[in-house]
Length: 289
Image (cartoon, rainbow, N blue to C red; front, top):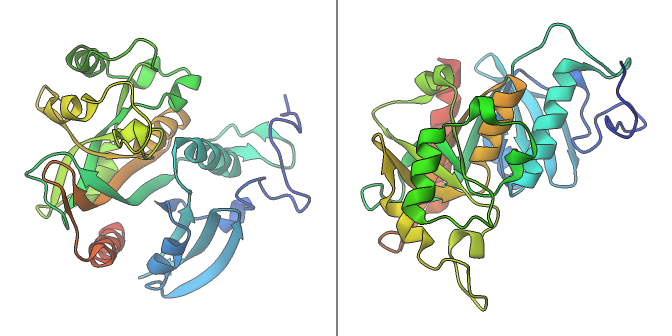
């Protein structure tokens, strides 16, 4: 059965609606960044550029780094944007856009996030790198889908009990990264842990300006949580959505974070651009090894 025009939305030129991309425009290895300006900070190291486009906050550039074809895509901020990007990338490789039918043979993409984040633990300092072995979803976007097959109930239930999680909020979801990508990207230079993904920057991450928040002590509870040796290490706004959507759609995902703040001791990097650039070079070289 072909998909309706209202479900699979295409632009007049046949490209996918938000990303403005056609299947031939993307590589199988894709780097996600949040900031559209960071796309060029990665592709400046490419040997050659074959394609580039932008629509709204979604900028895509595809080219070659040391002989490997890579795409870099800016997702914008937040899990809602990840829902758009992941579904449309999957459509590009797994749906025939002309017949609007799902392909019999499915393709798996490799998706690597390069982002910035704040550490929740004193022993993970600013200017370090962190690989998200697990993601802790606190925002609920991914629960719009059937997630039972990808969840980790033991960790989720322990977190709910430890934090006295409000039953008026979406139930937390824990999703692991892709093991093969993790092996490719890890080293003795990088920390590992569980990245908590919030649905906003202020209240959802415990910041208080003029509005009171539902649980002022939640950050301290997250900091002290541990289950089976797994500890919450940092807080941001995309990783759990990437991991959840990737697992559900059959893609491989791993998130790398430049730690530019440490909320446990109140410090911030003196040169955040430098640590991000170092993480970019680290990731590119790991991908071509």
